[in-house]
Length: 238
Image (cartoon, rainbow, N blue to C red; front, side, top):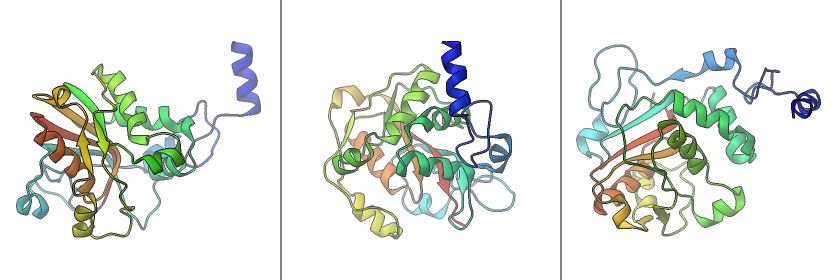
């Protein structure tokens, strides 16, 4: 087995999934890891939106005007749409180039940098609609959630939520349009599985939070006691 592993490394040397630099194993290299912007204070204690500058954490206007159904949402990193990010480069390869070999890299990053200390009863991924699942061949949120569940030794329920209908892509939509787009898009398959539970909802990215908010609302209405949200990266508002 060692000889086979050596031969594979010789023929297909491991590389950083962001910059393609040769590495000892398939993982983000030191330079790319250092270039990732972590989500840090000051931020909204509810939705985790990061604020520029320094100062204490405080509620954002979105959470003040429309308190979400989740208790906390946190991201491991933030990114800007007008700037490159090694984490987003790797995530795009994972999702759109359907490079499933990056699942352990991104899953481990999510598990290792998880900023939530709550011990949850159940981990649930945000579901894909059937059309996207057929095209991609896997649900990226479910793959990431599986790594987090294994690292945290918590039960994973990948089928707890389902998409009731196909929704148009959220890219390019404003906040109000995103909320309307996701309204009523999810349903709980087994209410007994979520009733009275504290749930960690996992997704890959978060922009305005419309998707995870609709999922959290659906879970709370099905009897979940608390829902927290964990994503790999969040788009910076500024």
